[in-house]
Image (cartoon, rainbow, N blue to C red; front, top):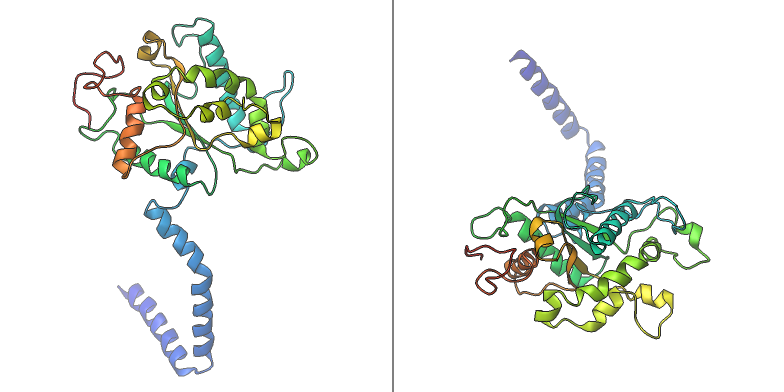
Length: 299
């Protein structure tokens, strides 16, 4: 108690000195004003983040970095997080294409089932999709909203086309000035192969999505040079990667669904679209033969 009184007495003495010392008061006032001005951006960022409204804040939690991105050739080892991830993804896709029927021979380091989202800054459709993803994640285990297999955890990865790398300056005079350009060059074969196959997926067949987006995603836009083809890569691109037993049984294992926007007037509607994508498109009521949906009601 004596210690608290001593501390309190100390601050009281300081306050009295400030009150009685006229020249100190304007300095403190001016200093306080400048401190407030300089702190406004940080306060604003904190408030936006706390409210979940800061653009890209949610995506950043799941980001695979392009830092260290180089143009791979021969037996070069992947340097960036995004490259290492995509090399594993491409290897798995090739093994499935060659007849793999289980996960025994696959690289499962990144999970059994997940979204992969390509985004960039100043992209309104990316921001719209982000709010749907956040709502889906927050409601994942809630009654009457979780995807059919509630044992599966919500999992996603994001790669930003706007990210810069310290290796960018090494490519100033060649194609691939940006880290994302180099990433696309490195994995062009994957996009060339997967894009056409996804046109047989339910989202294309049932939703009638624009064929031009698939061409751009496949890096096969006609009449364009490589630079413009890469620049036309659609963002956002939302992929569903599924290595579940159900996916293998249905012949849908690997990169199995794609979207280029998320529609809906509310976060709940957008989340529902993403949830149905996770369940391979339709709830049980609309598709009772869907191996990914069970017979319970899904909101």
